[in-house]
Amino acid sequence: MCDIGTDHGYLPCYLVSNGKCDSALACDIGEKPLSQAREHIKAQGLEDRIKTVLSDGLDSVELEGVTDIVLAGMGGELIADILSRCERIKDGSVNIIMQPMTKSEFLRQWLYDNGFAVTDEQACISGRFAYSVMSGRFNRKPEYVCDEDHLHFGLVSDKTAEGREYILRRCESLERAAKGMTGSQDKKASGERLLEIVYNKRKEVGENGKGQ
Image (cartoon, rainbow, N blue to C red; front, side, top):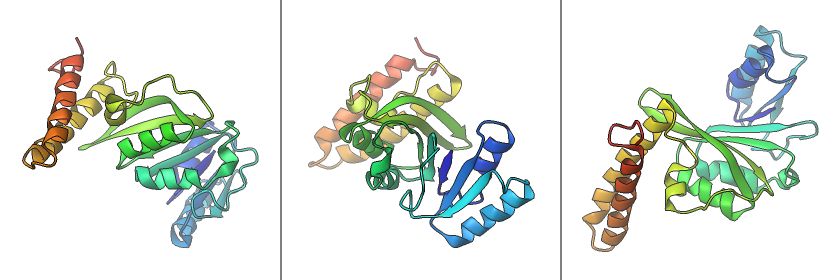
């Protein structure tokens, strides 16, 4: 696997040491975090299985043998930018795992518009934060409609506790934004439409978040 923006290299070390993958690339744009990653990799005794790469996104990464790319802990716009600059992933052979901290709607729309399909999406809850983790590939026909519901909630299912929590927290955030928009004459219609989306989603999962 190839971890972009690896920081301390925790993810590659975990995956390799637990037998999730045979080898890994720990990549970062900064020399300082990459140095920290090297120290952690050495401490784990994994120097022969994890290679560090100084790279702006995927620009300087050799992808031969890479089956999975992880882009986590960054904004959705940055993830889209990194993918847009890498023509080598467009053979559809690489699985791309994305965890946008912000702008998930932007990323979902960008993926749909640029030949990528999200094949799976799950929610992750960390304290007061709720995130979506997406898995996707290039040159796959999406098995979903990229409508407003998909942009805001993706393929996250309400059948799991994490999924329900993600959806309900998204509803709360969207509702706050919508109420702010309805106070503006220019954005009133958009705000009302967003409130309608939130109402329908809450009805779909049930008021208590346990589904209907």
